[in-house]
Length: 511
Image 1 (spheres, rainbow, N blue to C red):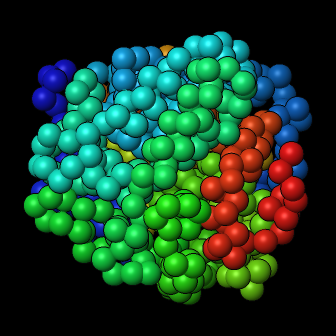
Image 2 (cartoon, rainbow, N blue to C red):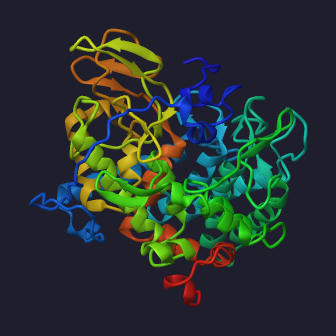
């Protein structure tokens, strides 16, 4: 693989596209299905009973069979290992995609910093190893250059460029933006480290101090050219991106961290501005009534760090559910969509489901066995919801895996079935590959991954922002570990409170 190879994800961020989230907002960039399907959600129990609304999770790790427990444990460890092996130990930078040459993704770093704590708790690495890797990472970001130049910098106003050079840590290319949301994922890992490494040792004290420096430096108010909303990003050439974060999607934590800042905070009306567009996405899809966002990552990223169980803002109080329940309904809706399979893709069903942003075979028109012509995409934000449908038969295991804390009773059987059905083609040393497509079964070479005749297309690498929700959410489901650490962080608590969240753990004193 050439060091100059650019992934499908990078292509989506090339000039004229800016980033995947703007494409999601401008839905004409996506090929959408036109069929409306009526299918009740199929709730998984041992008897596979029908239900139109999912019930609260009843499945714990301890209730799984021994083979299922072994599968989940193996997946968590392998996914953790992706972050550990892929990182540059000298500066802590973690690749966007791996194995193979890649630029660094600051979002991958945020997930990785959190994964190190999981690794230490699970015994994959020692606490000392986690401390040293975390220190190398935080020292880099605390000392990285911050200026308005095109190339000779890592960030500006406390924010960082979406993609950095793995070795130098400088902006990778001029098409990559100073990203508010990817800085948020980085900061989530930084704040996790601040709260997790709480011992009275020189190194752990330094971690806490560096984390504070990195977070306090971010000038959230500067990233508000159209206040009270927060912009998606900035570039030296194009200046502020002409799009803001407004709900409901993965940008929730952008506002929580901005509201929690002790130095460059934003006004509290930003949250109400963020939620003001919720009515456009609230509605019924595939038997579930919930806040729709077609790709599953929008239901997983903020929820990977913040424990929304039992805490509610004004909007969720009025609608009688919290954001974890909303993610649960989204997972059930995606499963029901796969069961209905309106576009008749191969292998879709009760245990093969999950649409989200991921790699794909790559911008190819293919004649199918029934003589129809189908288009297959590269990296794109696949999804199914009221907002849009983008489905080319490509399944991303992270769509289900990152939902395990929402709906383990349908996720665990899906992960087990996918692993059993496709074997080593879909599951390797780092867990599940990023995506697979059973319908892309052809001698035509794909632009990404490989084709296994008789089984379909399989990616050959993993992407950090898809690996992250798997390992974090498995641990949240098993022990609540990441959620419990983040509950201790004063900036997270302050941000939630300023956004109007009350109830549950938020109303209790920090232990």
